Image 1 (cartoon, rainbow, N blue to C red):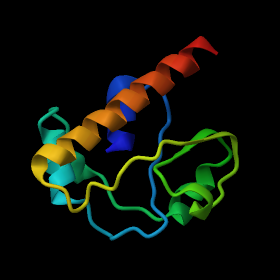
Image 2 (image 1 turned 60 degrees about the vertical axis):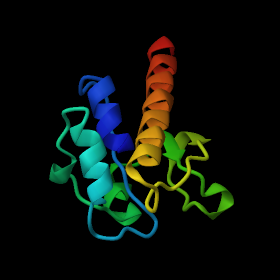
Image 3 (image 1 turned 30 degrees about the horizontal axis):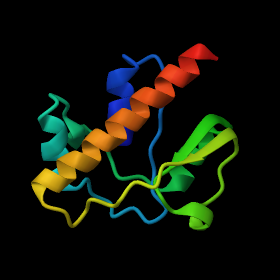
Amino acid sequence: MSEALARIYSNGKVDVYSAGSKPSGTINPKAIAAMKELNYDLSIHQSKDIKEVEVHAPFDVVVTMGCGDACPWMPAKRFIDWQIPDPKEMDAVEFRKVRDLIGKKVMGLLEELNKE
């Protein structure tokens, strides 16, 4: 969802990649449904391993979602950890709250980057 939200809110003006340290290989159907509510088709995305996006490094910013010191390292100028709860087992209402939290964080980061 973070990759999709960054694409939406930047109007495609930033290169953005999303990957997981332990990808499931599928996109969570709840995430697809939550993003469909924002008129975004998340089903076109793939679940990716970090090794798959590593080829695009170094990055300006790497954002992690709450893994702290357990996060794999990626070459970047800046690292941010947002401490986002994993919504995987949440009901639709709570899942949307996490989607919206990610959206707010993404918008804030994009605004910050536009000032630099």
